[in-house]
Image 1 (cartoon, rainbow, N blue to C red):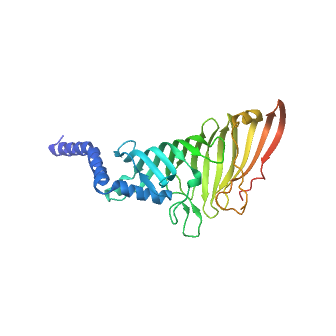
Image 2: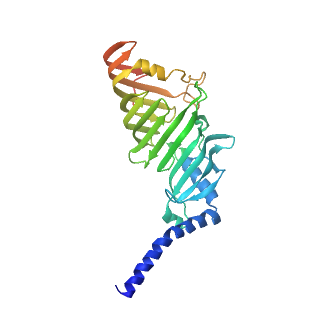
Image 3: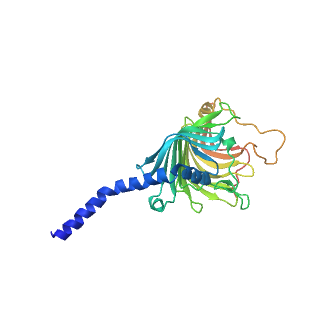
Length: 301
């Protein structure tokens, strides 16, 4: 081996060894001297459509990706937050960081609460009603993960439930996006959604669900405005109604408000579910080829 080749090899080894330190120095410089926390709050606010505050610990993260981690991420108005996370991890793209630009790759939050009634997106933001036509738009986050989050529903008894995991992977407005939702002791569902911005609607497809231990599959849609509406066309090989009744014991559905019924804010969600079952068991009676409707027939257009 020639001396020149040895020098090249040693140079490459040194570069490889120093690369992690250089990466750390680059990210740490941005974090400490370029207002990383304030910049991240601003970018997150634009993506999520609400004010974002990072109130606790804030430190550089190298694994599992370049970014930041910390405690105390709050979304929404102080004192009336839409969501609060005890812990978070936020990955940022490395190449734009070298040009002092911040591009968020994914957000993961663990332990916290969500109050859906407090969702009031800022006008013209990356979520909620935008200035261009007033249509609803989804946050521009490719991967979003919530784990162990309590959902507060004031109209229900008990007033909430625990989401053990909700995840969206690879979101894009022009293609189907995989999602996963698990609610402790009640529901687990995997599937895909496609965002229809012209109708403020999520088309749901390929749904594989487990409801109170019973397998259900199907498709449907979730309309977000003017009145929220969940419409599902589901099928099961076998449904045990008594088991479902036991699983839902203690839950009281929200009632529609009196007075205004023209689709104003705060109106209860419209539910349309069609469930067909090859076999349905209730009160010891077994029936075949049963179709049960909750509300009117679903119609996602």
